[in-house]
Amino acid sequence: MLQAIHSQTSVLPGDITGQVKPQNLEQAAEQFEAMFLRSMMKQMRKASQALVDDNPFDSKQQRMMQEFYDDKLTSQLASQRSTGMAQMIIAQLGPQESASLKNGSRAVALEEHPQELKTPVVPVMRRGQE
Image (cartoon, rainbow, N blue to C red):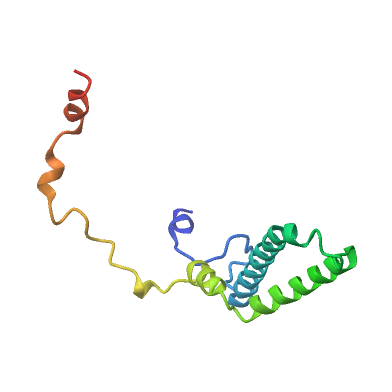
């Protein structure tokens, strides 16, 4: 049982089969990028709506068509991965190669100045209280 706990597998969260499926990760990353772009576009439209209030051509139908256009535009931008967000998500959540990781058997941070860590911390904290 301990072997099952300590085994390092690159399984995506929520994957009950235990198999990594890169196409699912790519699809999810692309969908997230589309949602992010859609939200950003919606906020940009909302900010510019103050200028359109006095426009005689402004109508409910035009706003609806503009939303359709924004959805199509953001989906197209996300499918082209124009912002690079999907690639970053895939790189961080995808399976990692073990050869690219450092050797964790030796302490790297403590090798340069080990004498600095010998100073007790508690007396330093108590000096300010006296």
